[in-house]
Amino acid sequence: MIFSVNQRLVAIIAGAVIAVLITGLIGFFSSQQISEELKYTDENIIRSLGILSSAERDFLLIRVNALYHLSYDDRAKKAPHEATIRRNIQEIQKRLADYEQNLIINSRDRELLQNDKQLFAIYLAALEKVLEKSNDRDREAAVVVVESEWKPAGDRLTAAFAEHSRYKERLVDQVVLQSMNKGRSAAWIVLLVTIVSALLLVVFGYLFKSTLPPRQN
Image (cartoon, rainbow, N blue to C red; front, side, top):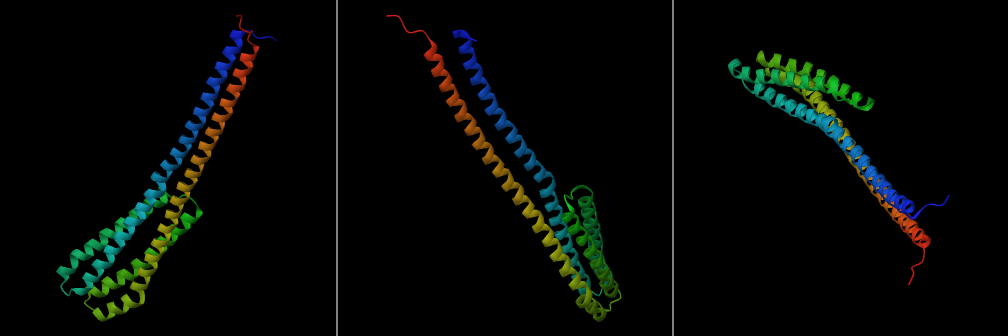
């Protein structure tokens, strides 16, 4: 089939438009995918890190107020610290429940959360003993519970929260690295498509020019 000059020109223009569209679509969908991954990271992993950080903060407040509770003999002075302890316990329980319902992303994450909850329950049992002895003004017995149960349970819970946070931080690093690699791959693909399209346009342009009738002097 022999194409006219106009048909050949239209074919070259159409090829150029298609090349531009392909290049743009590759860039668009690549950026959308990266955006979705980063959005997921922000909405899930970073939020879960915030919850773990808040739980650790509340846990430290519990420990500090428990020590104040132990230091006083007057029940009136103990009462505000015990109220703060109860409030922080509720906050931690609420945060861990929110995490379990909305933010678990895989089996390892679930395993770490269950470990957090189990160690927190053990810690609370020891804490109740400490508060009971403190309220009874039996400081010696309270110190025994502190050394044998409360402090070791607190240390294990601190380590568990830290391990869980490190795991989620590694996930953030993985997602960011994955997004960067995808971005680089997409950039190379766009560059390759652009080069190939430019070469094809040069070739078609040359062929088009070679089919034109020679100039008449």
